[in-house]
Amino acid sequence: MVLPAKIFEIQDEADVELMSTRLKEFREEEPYTLAEGETLTLVTEVLELEVKGDLISGVFSKDFIRSSQYRREVVESPITEEAPFWIKPFQEKAFLVVTAPSVARGVKKLLTSHVANKLSEVLFSRPWAIVEVKFSNEVLRELHESNPQATKLIWFDNVDIPSVEKLCLAGSSLADTKLYHDYIDHGTIWYVVFGVQKRGIVVGITRNCVITLFSKSTMEDFRTYILEDVLTLIE
Image 1 (cartoon, rainbow, N blue to C red):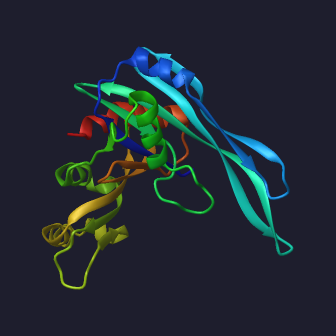
Image 2 (spheres, one colour):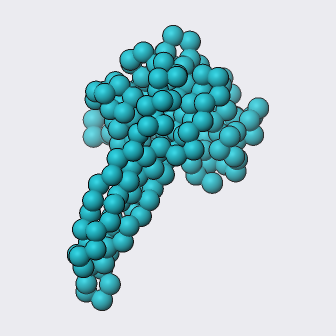
């Protein structure tokens, strides 16, 4: 099971009751005429909206038209993509977590950035009220150095070695403490994959707050891990 999620920060005041009302009322319809003349209504809305205490959960749903070729003709077909999300106030901040790809791969159209930008307009009537956040290099170093045996892969970027853009440690190389310190002296950690013993899962974390689940687990357990363990790492 590979499940990606990305964390964003809400910069405006996060009133749970007001946000839940706006999400409940949100629905956009867009007419689309297919090549053969039939008109469809493409819908963007939030499904399965639920509020538990200060936690808002829902599913962002958006219709698309997918075009493909069949016997040298373009065939258009409607599809619906969904991205579960959570909104959670934490300490003095509030965060949006979206479970969807962050980079266009394969046939997926609904990306985390699209969901964050749209929810910014829905919730706060303006763009960029929801922005990206990052982990510090020190936080990613601590994730590895606190339990090196659990680390499975590390990518380094911002490398100052001429003609080298990235460095990687994996497998037996991770046990080489000298090699790790050589790499950290010449770059910063971009991505680390490690096992979370108390949760029984394997995850990957990037500096721009993309969390990827690599092991078998439930969406509920993945959410709990992010909300209870990962949010505490964001400065």
